[in-house]
Image (cartoon, rainbow, N blue to C red; front, side):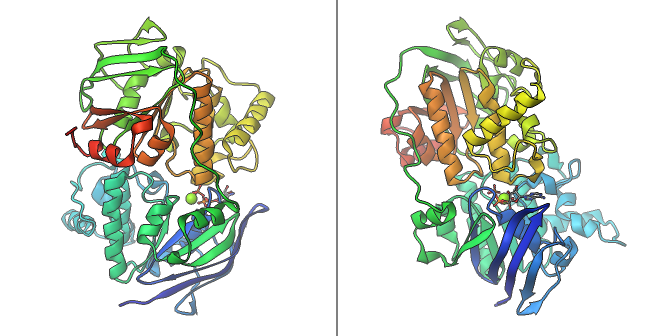
Length: 500
Ligand SMILES: Nc1ncnc2c1ncn2[C@@H]1O[C@H](COP(=O)(O)OP(=O)(O)OP(=O)(O)O)[C@@H](O)[C@H]1O
Ligand SMILES: [Mg+2]
């Protein structure tokens, strides 16, 4: 077995005065799966970016089997067999090209390459087969789901001679089943002697598949050693630097009977069938489901962001049916979409600008604030959702992935919406941020707003919701009172089980 040993020694990196990494040591051995964790902005992605040759101004040394290797540009890393599947998958894919072209991109870009399309497609297929995935490789990348895009990036890494593989939050876009599949692939790569870095905020999955653990906090190494040495709680404590109190808010007072939103017989042309649901004032209604069950479709349909038909409905005691986003915003609906990085934010604009445009980028109902007002408001949101940014002036691209999410969520807080729809809001945010987010949603409910909370994280639904509807194949197959809901029950219904 290949037992390469990769060492990063005393890595420091500053961005215009900001110390993102301070003398971090990190060791990865072939055949091990190494968990890299830490709160949003701790420096995980940056440390791995150094390893992949993204920066040339770091201090410290990188060695493979005790030999110093100069990694100062991406090609250096690739030639050493170091490959990365990025956190923001879209950044690494070329829109408009086919799946095959995206998988084989590095090969195609080689000077002197001769295009033999048949061979290229075959190689792309083989790379996918290593992952137990079969996709039509002629399809355009634009038609792929997030989970598929990730598989494509993974296949791209495996199309090379790969000794070290870095997976930056690979499970954030995946549901429980897809994650299991990925774990099986990781296990297989491990057996082949590849050293894998696995970045995740989900401690239980790190515990399940990683043998070694490194925790970063504020750009510094806090802990490194065997995974088994620490319990899940201890890991969270190391990440945060303090203990974490209960992550779910305490029980809310009993609900009023007032119904704020009701739909009957909602259909769309693709997936959703005969969906009827209602939402009470001050209620948090969970929508549970695995990927593909229709959670995102339902959220979009309710908000009018996709086409649907309903038999009947009411919103604030007025007859209503979803029309389009503009109409929804006017009637006090808000949607925090799932693909926030794509749909919710302006990546090259500062935090303040992102927070001051009206919540749905396409509307100007509230117009744009004055500069000073925007700045003050941004400071307030940064504090309220705990965004780790240097200030309202920082450009979003410079924030860590999790902190971009928080900004995308924060922009909805100004909205005077009375019904808020959250689609998988906790993807990629750390435990502390999750706790803040739950508190925020709980506070919205206590103020009397209605909240629809769609998620594949069943533990979160159980901890947070007053009532949970389970979606399977575009239908609501069960409705469970929050107090009686258990994770296993949700999993049972969401995999197509029906009541005994
Ligand atoms: N190019 C850059 N310019 C300025 N600051 C940067 C740049 N890249 C990263 N940072 C900062 O470095 C810190 C670490 O970011 P990094 O993306 O490594 O965090 P992370 O641990 O991956 O967090 P997450 O869990 O949110 O993905 C953050 O404060 C971020 O704002
Ligand atoms: Mg990151």
